[in-house]
Length: 83
Image (cartoon, rainbow, N blue to C red; front, side, top):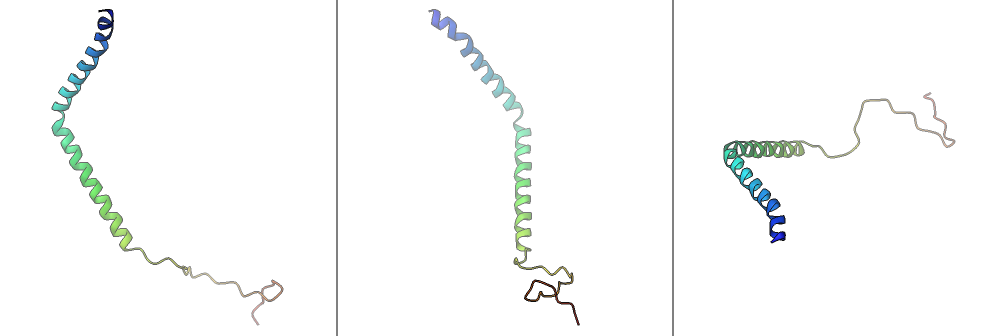
């Protein structure tokens, strides 16, 4: 009897919390549905943009920056000056 009296409080608190959460969830169903639709739309938009960006990527390779290149070095590691 003492064990039952000791454990009934936490059990009732847990069941009461479940009841309150289910009542709040029932009231918030339309709002949660709207949030779900917005999240799915945002996910679809991000995936579409990623695919579009991947389709526009170019092949990797050297990029010409339009900068002058240094003259080639001679056998001793010194740069040759133009004649």
